[in-house]
Length: 77
Image (cartoon, rainbow, N blue to C red; front, side, top):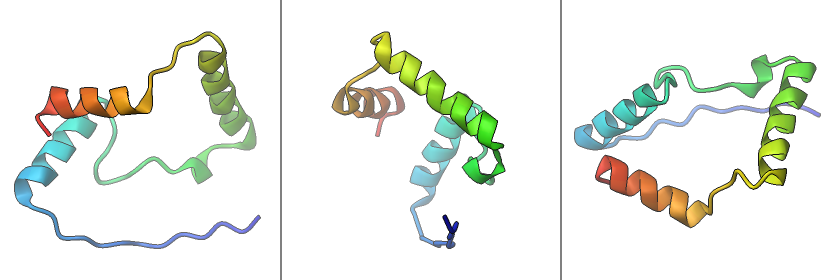
């Protein structure tokens, strides 16, 4: 499987950018360096998939609409 990537540049309002950065900072993700799954080994990638699958099987999930509504509420978006 070939891996393809591209860069995308978008202008956004400063207050939206600031809110985005603060959200990512709260969850310990880098705004400047997004998560890149291509840096994971095959074993690490499968381990992450297994974690998600285990959460799903044990009911540790949240409805997507509810999750996004919570994010909007929590961050005033």
